[in-house]
Image 1 (cartoon, rainbow, N blue to C red):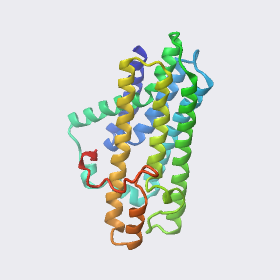
Image 2: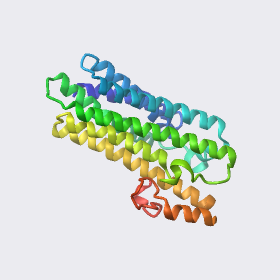
Image 3: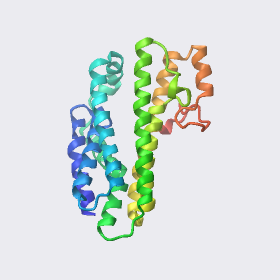
Image 4: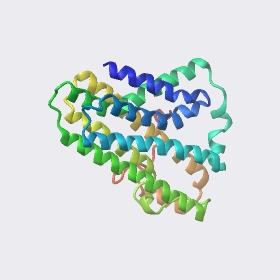
Length: 267
C-alpha cells in the first residue's frame, strides 16, 4: 500500500502543472504524470521487473512524453487548437476549491490507470505466483494501442496539410471516426488485463477498475466533444453526413455512431 502513496505524491506533484492553466490537469499534466509514474514504478520494483513489465512501463512512458510534447507543439503551432483551448468558457478562472478537486481527482485517476503494473510487480515482490502471460498480453496490446494513436495522428496531420477545411476520412479514419481515442482505450485495456495475472486482492481490483473505467469514460467524453465540434463545422456537408452514418465513432465494428445526446458523458 505504501507504494501507492508514493505514486499518488508523484502524480500530485507532476499534475500540479494544471494550476498554471486548469486544462493542463487533463492534458500536459496527464501525459507527464503517466510518464513519471511509469518511471517511478520501474525504479521502486527494479529488483523484480521482468522483460514484459519493462516493455509495458516503457510503452506508458513513451506514450506520456509523446502526448505532452504533442500537445505543447499543437498549442504553439495550431491557431485553431489554441482558439478552442482558450475560448472564454474554458479559460474563465475557476474557484480554488474546484481547481483543488480537479487536481486531486486527476492525480488519483492517473495512479489508478497505472496501478495494474504496480500491483503485478508488488505481488511478485511479495512472493505471489503471478502469471506473466497476462503481462505479455497487456504489453503487446498497449503497444498496439500506442502505434494506432501515432498512425492516426500522423494521418490527420498529413490530411489537414492538404485540406485544412475538410474532415479526415481515410486511413484509420475509414474504420473509426476517433482512432486516436480508440488507440488509447486499447492501450489502457492492455494495462488493465495485467490484473488477471497479478493475483490482485479485492481492493487492488477496485483501484485498477476505477482507473480503467475512468479513462474509458474520459475517452468517450472526448469523442462526444469532437462529434459536437465536427457537427457544428461540417454538419451541412452531405459527404460528412454519409461518413458519420457508416463509421462508428470510437470502437471499430461496434455500431455506436453518435454519443452527442448522452449528456452524462459531459466532463
